[in-house]
Length: 200
Image (cartoon, rainbow, N blue to C red; front, side):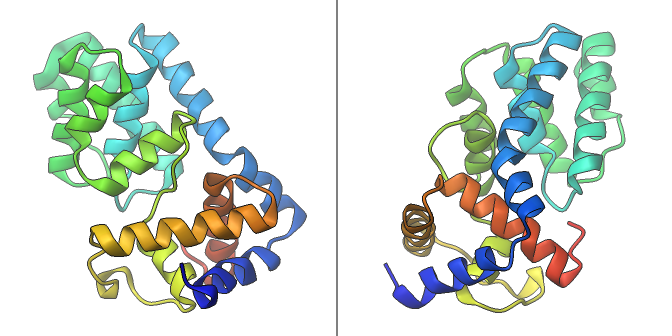
């Protein structure tokens, strides 16, 4: 746990407008409701919809992510895996394959989706959407934590030890602010996005 890094997180939080604080607090619950809506629309388990949203998220604007998830799930329900894999999405092909694998699994429990997602950031994102106690650590969260913006291509590899340290600092900052760690990450992210004009 590093005081300097905790203060970096809190400094971004202090720049959040009231609207950004509210948006951050409601971000993951709102995402969870989107997953529930998709699940109800296409008669699939909610945890599968959460997994699909997470799988399609890398380098994808959230608004587009939701559109892509809807299109891919619709294609899968109507035409199976082949049609879903032919659906255009705004992320990597490997991530589209993960989304389809989650739908093909037929499993309703979140751990099954997390196993297919495999990458720590995707697992964390899905867990936060599902309402579990976790923090999603991506390149933007690292920039906030270390106190300056760099291009995502220049963010160092976030290994197990560093990821654990960053999570602990977000937890500590959240405790001091009286909010959940996932809300802390979401509030600082929406604030960071506004400050730096980030779109993805």
